[in-house]
Length: 216
Image (cartoon, rainbow, N blue to C red; front, side, top):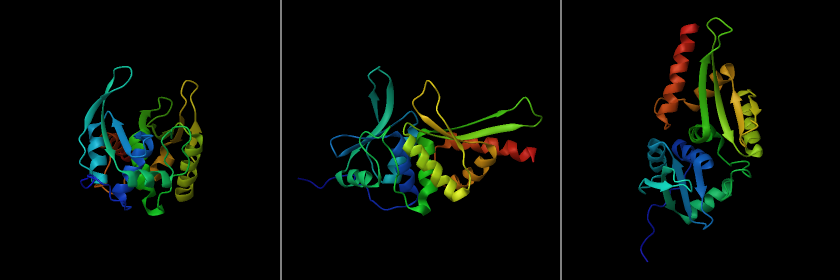
């Protein structure tokens, strides 16, 4: 037997923590105990995770049961798979996910990956108020236990509380931070111009922050 290829180096760093955030949201652990898959509509997302984990597996196309095509990266690594289980990920994670054991110094890198995988940022002018530009940073999970954990961890570090909503027609929970709290959260997630991230979300955030700066 040849030497296994594409082994992930398990060492915490900003990039590694970011990749864990992506796998927590958009990743899938196969029941075979070996394979992991990340599916995304953004090719940049897949390029980022390959770079962050130091793997070279090709970006492929896959079809859903409804015939919808999407991009994905699949790779096998038994040791890394077991590591993911040890920090809190599971093969059927969507509604059972809880605490993810991330070192404190890399929490906001993990959170940025989480946000890029399953978060959203939106902004608008409130017509009721003059010069009232509003925006929200939103983190999403199907697991109440996980979204509660995220809220506690962010509150512990930044003393902001956000609020949790669940729409009637959606099984996911949304942890939302309005403008004032977002202005505390976003600089922690994007603490450097060189951090790995999904550029389309960063551009949207930077555009909103420029509008805010003009209002001040």
